[in-house]
Amino acid sequence: MGWGLIKHLDRLWQWMTRHKLKTVFLSGVVIDFWANWYSYAIVHDWIYLQAPLGFLLPILNFPFIHWFIDEPDIKERFKMTIVTAFAMMLGSTIMLLMIRSGTGVGTDFIQ
Image (tube, rainbow, N blue to C red; front, side, top):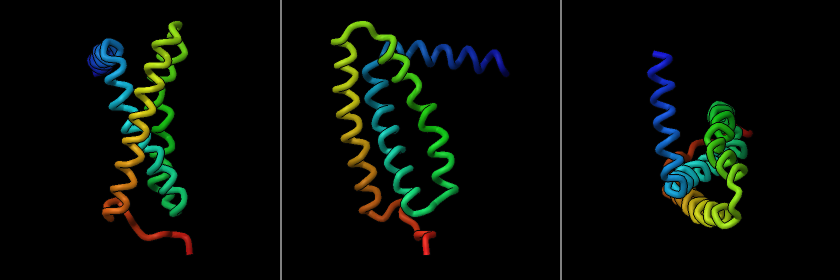
């Protein structure tokens, strides 16, 4: 099982690297949504939701930090920045629309 998982992750990493800007955009939407949901969970004292969300955020961000730091071309870094800005705009909007619609909204634990 271990070698199969490693080979699968290696193929996934290669695909993500070949499709870097698409990966940055799609994952950026998810990561921004996730980060906003994390903040929402903290405000509402949802410890059981906040803990796994907070744990996974740095892991989800790893590829983008790696690609951004290793990229020597400033134009490519700027492309990643612009794509990420649009992704964050969309991720935040989706999260706010979800909350406004009543999906994922619970009761505050803070009394």
